[in-house]
Amino acid sequence: MNGKTGNQSWQVVFDELPTSVDMLRALPQASLQEPHFAAALLIPALCRWPANQDAAIEMINFLKGPQGLSKHDIMFINDRLRGKEYVPFSYFAGTAPGNEYKPSRPFTVTVSTVPSSFAEDGYAKLYLQSSGADSPRPVQIRKKESSGEWFLWDQMLLADIRPPVSADPWA
View 1 (cartoon, one colour):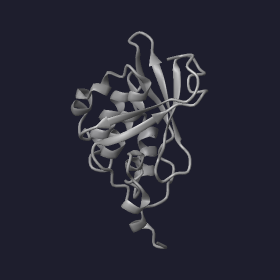
View 2: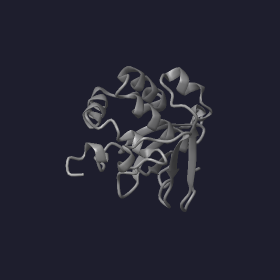
View 3: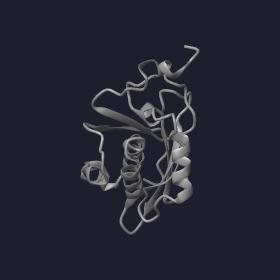
């Protein structure tokens, strides 16, 4: 993938959202042979966080490969999702503040590149659009050369977005 230029996008579709690391590993995208797979799989893992934080951590650690979540990472995700469980759901197609970020099936995540996405060897900066934000948010993916797999390196997906209409006291 290195050396690619221009904008490209992929739609990654899930019939069901995985609720465990075993379910996540069973998905075809879990091969992590393409950088957009790791970025897209992060969304259902983050969606699992409010219902079962331990399962979500296991899923994210799988996506992070040789370097799992730190205690700081866990505290950060916890802080960002506290009272804002809707944020990761906003990355699915068909969601909006007006429908309380309720995705339709199948669950679809679009992952995009920009001309500089593959500027650094062994890394890719990919972008996902939240339906509650004005601009796409980046996810950095790192390639493990020995296996050819792409793993989650960093994510900036959990910044505030427009609240669901039902949660907005001014709506």
